[in-house]
Length: 335
Image (cartoon, rainbow, N blue to C red):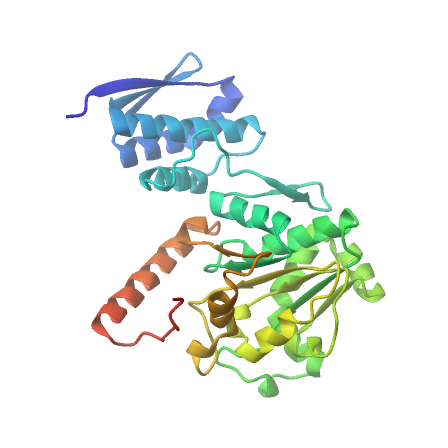
């Protein structure tokens, strides 16, 4: 039977305390309510009282929040929820380690950092490997962090150009029905890549590099027959490639290039989802040296908390349908 214990968390100053506590002590109330502990803050200290396992977890969460505040960042409710959820996972607790990892700085001087351990692992694998597959649901930062790493590599002169591409596969609409020329038809599919570059590089720098050919944003079909050397290449929405397109893309990679392929296997818009090039690449290439597969989850979602709940609800529904043998779009087995 667990005993009631008290754990101490030390604060540096009142400004840090306000950051950790949240508006109207919102963060402390979240910790108390979700972990069934009591937190008493006084004289630059937080005393956590509760059953041993809960008090240990609550103290660990609060210490992580203090670390964030010490780095000069604003503590958010999303971070509080994330660390609480992380601690509830037997494999998730990483005492003394912070998910914060500086990726690069925007043109306005704002640092871009990893916000979850999944994102941190993703960035570390990009640093270590020539080809990385980032697989996970919407809102996990797959594309944005990939673009940030590409900009960082370009600024450090590790590569001479950035190539961003994605398949122009419709989700309920036909390209032919959209107004305008080919470029205007494919622009909506490339918009997330444009937005990430604008945010990090600034519109003027982005436009200058685009005009000089340093940055290229194009549909996947434009990659055929090319050799892409000394470049940082990002293939987005890779779940909508066919196996033939994926093989074509991967065999374009030349000397001195690095590649990131991102996708969400739960949002395949192909007529036959089982023939996704991303699924087949995961099955065929997962043991190939120099290629890394990073799987992000709903826990790594850094958008509105409802996005995380929506993803979990859809996952639960898919599992239910799979158990009853109805409605689930099939994926080939990885084994």
